[in-house]
Image (cartoon, rainbow, N blue to C red; front, top):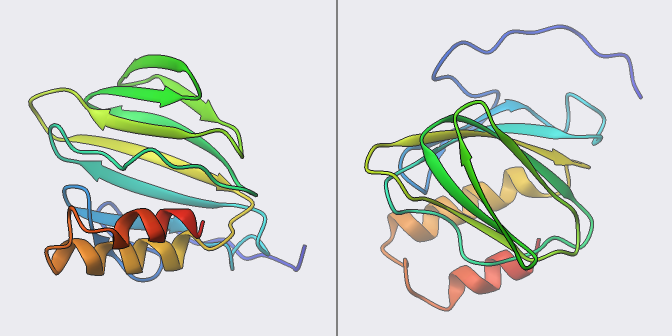
Length: 146
C-alpha cells in the first residue's frame, strides 16, 4: 500500500462527493483512493421503509454497522434483525438486501472490501433516484454491474 496520510471527516461531511439516494446524503468517509483500493467506508441514511433491491457483488464483501434505526437484512436465505450497535456481514457472491423497518430514519456504516466501484455506483444511483427512476429497470441494471 502507498504511504497514507491521516485525515478527519466531520459529521455530515463526505470525503469526496456526497450523494442522496435512500433517504438522505450518502457520505463517503474513507475512499478507496485513501486505502490504495483495499476498502471504502460509507455512512448511509435510510428513510423508513427504504432499502436497496436484492443484489450481490462478485468481488466485494460488505460489512454493515447500524448506527441508528431498526433494520432487517436478507443475506442469502438468512434474515437478520439488526438495531443500533449491531452489525452484519454480507460475503461476496451472496444475494443481499436490507430495509429500515422502523418508523424513523436510520443510519448505517457500510464497509466495502475491496473498494471496487462503489463510489461511482452511489453517484449513478443517486442520479437515477433524483430523476424519479425509483421503479425503472435501470436500477437493477446498475446493481448488476457491481
